[in-house]
Length: 316
Ligand code: TXA
Ligand code: MG
Image 1 (tube, rainbow, N blue to C red):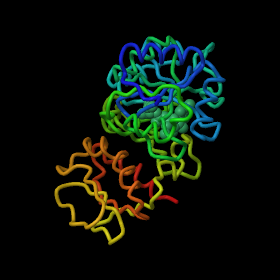
Image 2: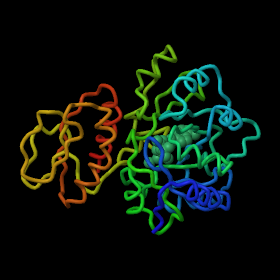
Image 3: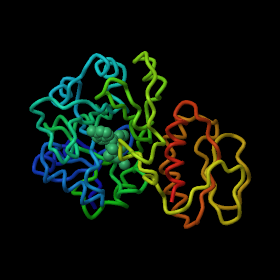
Image 4: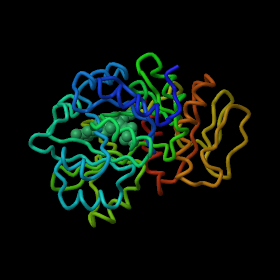
């Protein structure tokens, strides 16, 4: 059993595993990550193998603080402002690499930019500091599956390939980080996520350019249309569920359904819904239904990020 409660001992063993090129799954406030030493190309290759992920898909480097970030990436005034407002937290910045950036080319898929995040989760923080290296970490799921928000989700996908899964209970945010590209003159929203795009725009003082939905030429491979697909088909904008379907409900006015159903938030709270989303999709998928009928969710608050994930899940 690779699952271990995230005690000081387990974190110290996990850090040793990372320093010697192994893989460790660890909790972050967004979703569980599958970590490797971002400066060790062989270790990072292990991530791609474990996930069954296409190469050339760049990974986020997780660091402990802004000082650490500036060793690997160039932070201009916009990046400094966003870092001050949202780090540690659910924001990833795509930035230009520093001239002698030690992060492996495999981590950045050969790009001259690097995606950096400072997670707030105390276990992630402790692990990064104990390992003493930046951690390349995608979500700890097989490629194309929904992201894991519990250690058990990780085990279901990766038990055979990961040495240690550090368990610290369900992820608080439950949806991946917001990805903003600051490598060019105009800030671009590459992925809606745990930090609301409006809050980012307020700090920047300019609107984000949205490439989301441009699945023809994704600049961020996480935008690939069917990236978050459960096994079942997802039917969007459902007001009722048919017999044989599962119901993914939202809000107080959920229809009666004589079959599997989960309500993401009875009070219609998009933050609570984001935290429940991936576990709900896994639970309904496990019922073996062919279709999950998803009720509409308003595009406000974290609704933008939730609807983005549901639209991808609906693509076959
Ligand atoms: O919340 C999260 O972000 C989680 C936790 C573990 O930190 N990680 C995560 O990683 O969701 P992943 O690999 O599933 O998604 C990273 C996203 C992908 O869409 C990837 O294409 C994009 O970030 N990305 C990474 N580096 C990039 C770069 N240099 N340029 C553009 N996009 C990049
Ligand atoms: Mg992922």
